[in-house]
Length: 332
Figure (cartoon, rainbow, N blue to C red):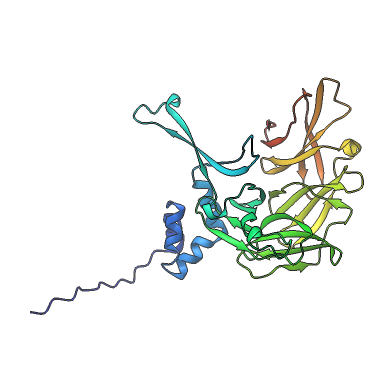
C-alpha cells in the first residue's frame, strides 16, 4: 500500500511587514542574520537602518574597552560583561568577564578603533598589512561586535592620508567610510567608500587644507562633528561638520569670547545636542584647572550657551564623556 503524501495546507493569510518586524526585533542578532535568507521581504526588513537602530536599542548593553599590557604594550579591544553567580545572585557574587571582540584571525598586538557608527566599528587591519607588504597603503575592516559580522574594506588609492569617520548615508541607508588624502599627487582631497563596495571615490567637498582633525567625530542628527585645529599653531579654529546626506563639509564658529583660549578641548553628546568642553586658562591657577562646558542650542543660528565653569585638580587629564540636557556632565 502506497504511503500517503502529506497534505500541504496553503494559506493566503500573510502577516503585515510591520508585525513581522516587531517580532524579529525580539530575536537575538545571530538569529536575525539566519532569518534574512527566508525571503526578500525579511531581508529588506532586517537590513533597514530604522530596524537596525531599534534592535541595537533593545540589545543588552556591552562595554568595549582597550586593554594594554605593561610589558609588551600590546593593546586589545575587549568587551566586558557582568555575570551574577547563581543561586545567590547578589552584587557581591558578581564576576567581570572579559572576552575578545575580534575573531582570532584578526587579532593583532595593536587593535585601534579608527571610526564607529550605530554599533559598527572600523579598525586597522594589521594582519592583512603584514601579509600584503607590497605597498604602504593602509587596510581596514568593519565589524559588528554583537553579531561578529565582518567586512573587509578595499584598499584606498593613496597611502598618505587618514580615516576621518564612519557614517550612515540617510538617502540610501548605506554605511560609508570617509578618508582624507594628503599626498604629493593628490592634496587635501576626500574619498569615501560604501561598505560592501568595490572601490573608493572622490567627492567634491573638502575642508580647508590648513585645518586638521585629530579625533573620532561626534555623530549627531545627520552630521559628523570634529574640532578643527590650525595646522601651523595647533589652536582650535572652528568646528568642522560633515553633512552625511549632501556629503558636504561646513565650518561652524566656536563661542566667540573663548576662541583665543582654545588649546585643549573635546566634543561630546549633551543629550540630543552637541556639547563642547574647553580648558579655560583665565579660570585656571597653579593648582586647579578651569574647564568651561558649552552646549549648541541652535544648529542653524550657531548659538552656543555656557552651561558650567568648573575647577578641577591640575594633576589629572580630564575629558568630557557625555552630558544630559538637565545640565549634568560626566567627566573622566
